[in-house]
Image (cartoon, rainbow, N blue to C red; front, side, top):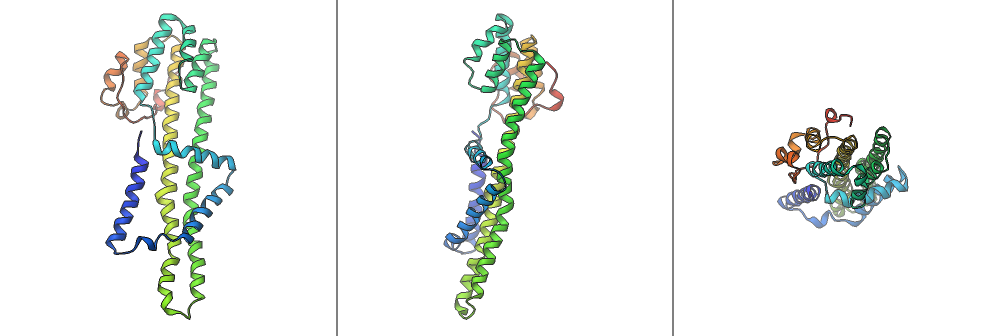
Length: 280
């Protein structure tokens, strides 16, 4: 689990609270129901209107995963592929069908089943690339939805401020009330900016980043299983897959893990470089 998003949002709101305290202002003055309902409600509604309802559902489903930030370290992926290569080398490709029944990852399970069924290497590559592209499109859809909310929110906040100022102008005959009313009018703009920069944009960026990492993991698996199908030597396959992962993402034990098939470091999951993609 990578709590970066949760920690970042909490620290951001903590900094806001610290500023309010240092300014001797009141938090309650910012927690006004009317502007918050307008900013959050209208922003989400406009976001839905700008796409399809399915896009909205995809975005909502992506939020828990974005908050948890669960990723698979590259070395773990490499170790799994090396184990499969050893099994295929000693027992034959048909033995991978048994492995497919125990694998939890649908992408890897499908790849192993296709290998056991005798699918041609080039055809299998096309199938796996299509699956990777499909997964990437899902992440892009969710990320784009939250990015759009980040664009709409400040403008919706300004609309709320204009509406409130219109109400202020209706009460010019009561000068003693103008100060609090004007202050309350700008709360809508504040929540528009806050929601965009403290919530919507960070969540959208996080989903995009996790999508890139998942695509990289699937690409690493694809190159690995295609090499297994081609009969690559396990140790050399491990070294080749390691070369596809940036050095900083390999972790402290990444130098030795590829040779002995042991557990690798639990570093951040990064994708294979473009140069590392060699045909199986």
